[in-house]
Length: 238
View 1 (cartoon, rainbow, N blue to C red):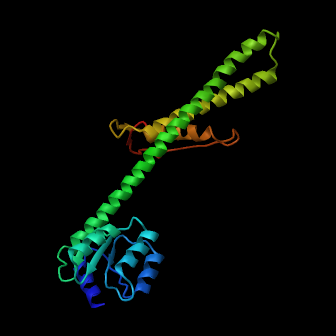
View 2: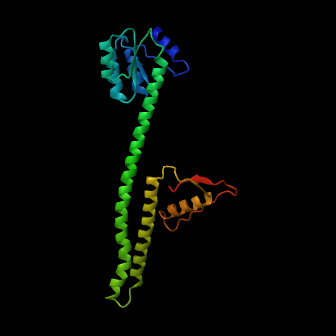
View 3: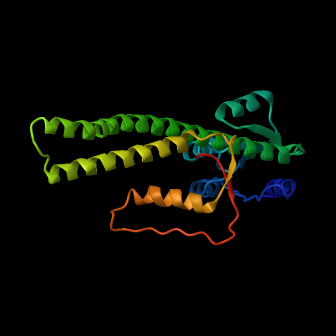
């Protein structure tokens, strides 16, 4: 416990430190919640450093772990890195500990951000592909509603109103679907913030109302209003 309090003082103002003085406490704390950085003593009573890192990697494989121990030779340090620790410190040499914890946390944060960015990129690429395929399908309906009346007139002197009504509904639905697909593709592609321009909020609300209205039954009416004097918004085409 005394060593743990020394570590706690070294990290004062850098991190909030919770202490586990036994292996069982460590297991309970690691199991109960997610930690930004975990410091492990290789000499924790009744619990080895290898057991600690094994449990941590099993429960939270991306959480960085740092060794703080009484003494450590080169082979031990190499083995620690192999096990997954990101840094090692001896208890009588803790001058680098605060920087080490901050660096480990920052690297973890950047890694999480990179994973999220990659996931967003994958979602965007997948959505773009779906929208492209959907457009191809909708084009069949759009072209079909133009061709069908001409074909029907070759066999009928007059096209019944019921058929015209169905063709009109198909044409309207295909046009709405194509427009929604176009808006979705514009959104996922983005413009990297290079073409921002001021836009009136009334225009944005009108666009949103139109997009949402197309997904609702005709019986539902939407009304959007902006307060007089509302400032313009800088935005891109997405």
